[in-house]
Image (cartoon, rainbow, N blue to C red; front, side, top):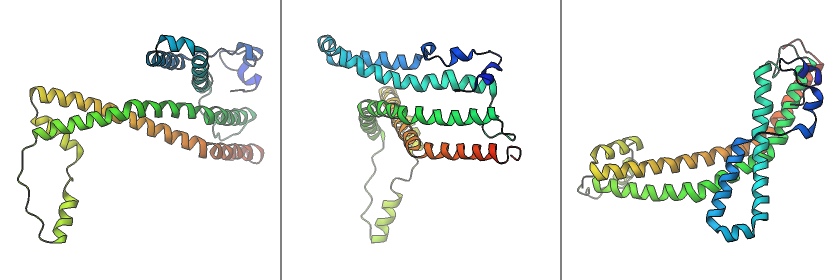
Length: 255
């Protein structure tokens, strides 16, 4: 986190200041980012074929390595900077009752570093999740939903159509109360009525539908995080740094 040398020297692990600030010694371990890189590499190779993959390998490798680098920045920041610092120091430096030089520097450096790292890197995560949802989640939701409805429709008992509404008010009431059965009850009623092959098909299509819904939820969460980081994180951290500065300079012992 860029804390002062005396702060790191006081930690139980006893960091050496020169090695901590030497960029040549920075070798982050990014297991998750490497996994995404290998998965994208294999996916592209399977889509374009070996011949095209070899022909365009410099462009493909350069693009994928930059994606991996952006993801690795976030992963290493949390795994190698934030998590160890919080394990050793706790969260007492966030808004302590007594503001010291160490707690002030820790909070300010953390806030500024979070801005630089997250504002750019969350875009990559959003792009990856959006592509995954468009090319995987959306087709799965569409096909599994249609297949589920087709099987479920065959299990529903046929009902005689009601007589036409006598008044416009009755028509409005029917339109409002047409689909008031909760979605969970529809699922449980359909599964209870299914047997044998129909039950197996419903379980298969239902699982695919849940997977597609999970993909959509992940995309929406990534978009919400990206919107927050892009619009509000900077304002939040600037306000936080301002509070820390006023606390440290004017009344370090009040709150």
